[in-house]
Length: 161
Image (cartoon, rainbow, N blue to C red; front, side, top):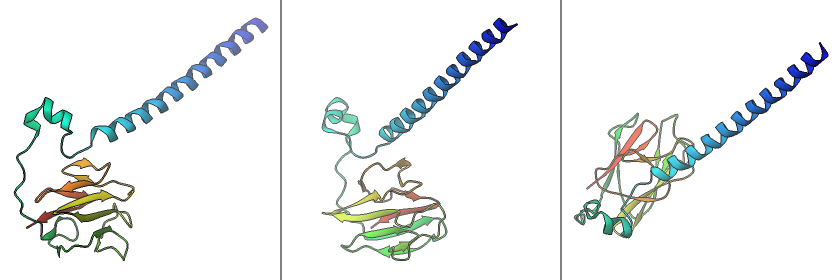
């Protein structure tokens, strides 16, 4: 009888060891998946190497129509318009934000829209739920073209001329 209990104890030990390895591998798999998603969702212009290999990825140069307005197209503030100037626009729930978002999915200081040369760029300021440009989550500051939607929670904004 004591041999059976030793055998049972050994099998239980190996069973627990297998369960621990399954847990470790699932955590590593989840971390890898999260890192790959961030890499895969980058948006913006193709690199020089990608442009040489795939010329169809290169758009014709955009017409030099400058953005003059920021328009909220979806969400609680739909219809709100802000005239653009040379200063950056802070987007978020904080009262000091240029556009105060009435959205539970927005962080206090969620994103920043800023001019650089003749273009406007959007960058996420480390928000919890992310900022999306044309459906792709931002991983760095990217240029925003006219009419391209930027989503922060339930709020969608666009630049217009």
